[in-house]
Image 1 (cartoon, rainbow, N blue to C red):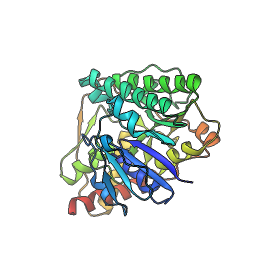
Image 2: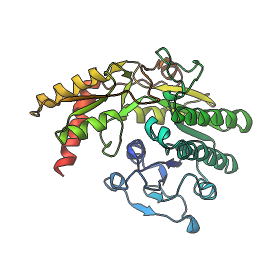
Image 3: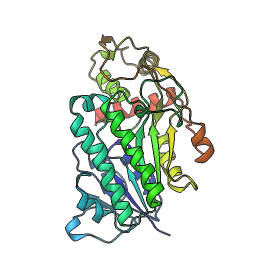
Image 4: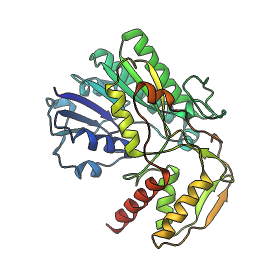
Length: 331
């Protein structure tokens, strides 16, 4: 039976990786929602599947083996309602990402991460879409002792964390009130192949290395994160799409391993040296406002209820990621 997917932010790093996996199954029909303000259609054009740039004013029927791209903004509630009609599942990835942008412009962060989520939950309700997956973040918990788990009381330290927490709250309400099987996935620090436009730490370091500039570390580098490889993350999303009895639930999706920024730099430095590149210089700057000092995730709930766990070691993931960035630069 054909499963009909709506992927918001589908031209982004995570979205394009998810769609690459979905389109390998010929029984999936996929609609991509992306205004291209951050993402690019190019990763999807590399897939062996036709792309139709569709118009909500002339809505096409659902089609297998064809990607339907709608260049619309998630803040547009009317278009959200139209593009989700007939869908089986909405994966809501589109968002304002990162602490820094949310501190610079909290209102824009709220409009994307709160109103954007609300629009697609409402669309799910009005169109009877049975399942809704939200990309969330451990930033909702705030600066707390690790490991982070789903029962920790949230105390966000940034507008980004607050807006993501609001999205989780709406997901809970729409499950409890309207019966939509919502699942919120709190992603760790995602890295990997395809992250050229990302401003997360691994992507920044890769681009900086290839420009032969120093790597900038905010603070002394002792802050820790939980770095998860893109392939593992996509597996978690697809697991959440089919798991039973998970409506209204929240899951930590990461590696259950704490890595400091200094350790990350050591892994990257040894990798580039082994591949014949110069070991990077390091530049330390002041700690950023709103940044959490130490965080990693307890992923036991995802193992139990989603039958999922991360598989990719940091060393292997960094090697594959660096090789991809080098290849992209050569092209």
